[in-house]
Amino acid sequence: MRSFIKTTVFSALMLSTLVGGAFAASGGIDDSSGDYYEGIDPHADALNPPIPRMAPMTTSSIHRTMAERPRLTHVLSELRVYDRRINRLRPVAANSARHEEADIRAQAMAVADRHDGVIPGRNYQQLQREIRKLDRDIVRSS
Image (spheres, rainbow, N blue to C red):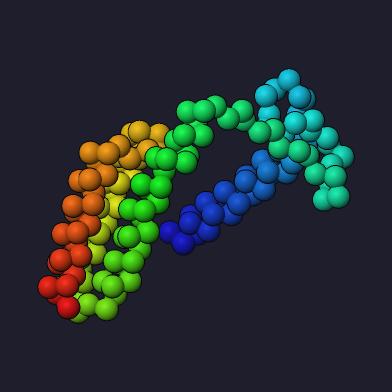
């Protein structure tokens, strides 16, 4: 059994090395491919790096990044604070609080994924209620 595992691992390493070498040796990509880098130069080095092409910003994307994403950032930063407070609790109380915190984090990320990184107002209010409940539970458990 050990020989089979060693052979499999060795084969996977060799295959990935060969494929990676072939990919690295393929050189530059032409500009018409819509590559991220503008003007790919196969002779580019650390002193002459390719210039990344920036996507045009629209007013809706500017509005979204300025007004809506702080909700997700705010929720996640609050959860980080409560995670530190959970670390000070007894193990039994900490486990239940950790599960509650993980559920809130998963719910926030799922809502943000469904809405392109934005947390709508109703969902944000619901998350805030759950965070306040988590805070009360942590205070009661300490």
